[in-house]
Picture 1: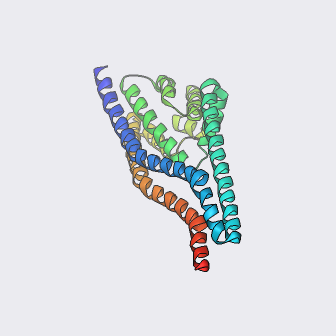
Picture 2: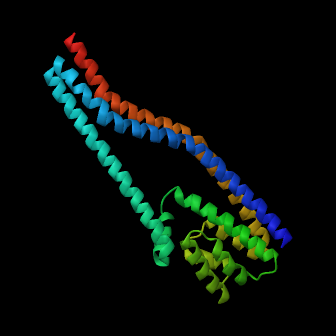
Length: 261
């Protein structure tokens, strides 16, 4: 138990460090984006409409066009906010359904595995957790069937957990572990391949150790990419918003003033 807890502490500490770094990298972009959104709402409600009177005194036709621009901008902003609210409600309902209804959890997690990019992260996260658990259990004297039964608990994605349960039943009927995983058609091919190598060498523990090291490295790289891309993506989004505001409101004002002068 002492050895297992020592390894578990090291493992959890490394995961916590990665999560903390990612959260720290995303807090600033999220704050800036929130400020920009709030600023746009205030701009559309209080600032821009007040300019209509000033423009009307100089050019009534331009003021009418400017008012149409404001109304169009407000409608787009309202639609965008409503869409975000609908998406947030949908995600919330999906999370509630995942926790309360097992069949919905399997269905939703199965959909997540079909999303490009997200599938890679979920596969790496599952591979790391599963490989660590199996390596520890097999080293502690568990049989493969017993280790698989316990290993299902570390699968956060319920589609992976269902696949492990089915694979365990096939192993108990005499099918090879790697073939059982492959028949489920949900597990990463790299994991299946390493299990076949481990079975051929009669040493699954080493295969799980290699998989654990690989997926730890992959997750490190993934979190590093997220942290490196957070700021450029933020700059691009804020720049696109500012460009839209300039093209919709600022440019027509300067054009009108130039014509008046």
